[in-house]
Image (cartoon, rainbow, N blue to C red; front, top):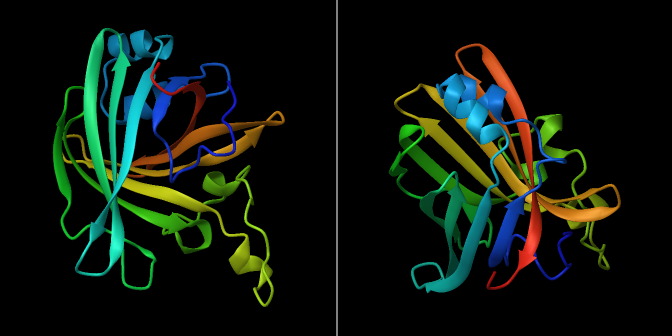
Length: 209
């Protein structure tokens, strides 16, 4: 199911289901991340659901909000909980967290994670793969330059697999696919000289499902 316009990266609260038809195969990326063939084969066709709760609190030090994105991903009878914190600086721009979050994932082992708000032209991941198909929903206001006004706000995530030696650089956004609006998570996974790109597409399931 396509996402309604009021569901954005600033409001991801609700339930999501992986669209297997529109998504890339995750197998090449999982192989690079050290996941066995048997597990990759099971994941390739398994349904995936994500339940997300997004909230805002005030960061009194800078006078801007801190966004908390708490999610639970379910697949193959196993659930994985995750929490991300996104901050803004005094100028309102996204900032990387002061410290990397260290997490232990049941599939990938030890990982360090950093997240922030970003705009595509200011993202440190400027590969064409990450921006094709993005929505330009902002309208140009009086006195604004076109290239600034139409920048897409996204969530940028960098995951370093400290056990496997890989890096997954991700962009969470919304895209129009076949005339419908979907939540997507694009990733560029690298290890040594190898690079794999994937796009995961999620169907909106509504609130409370």
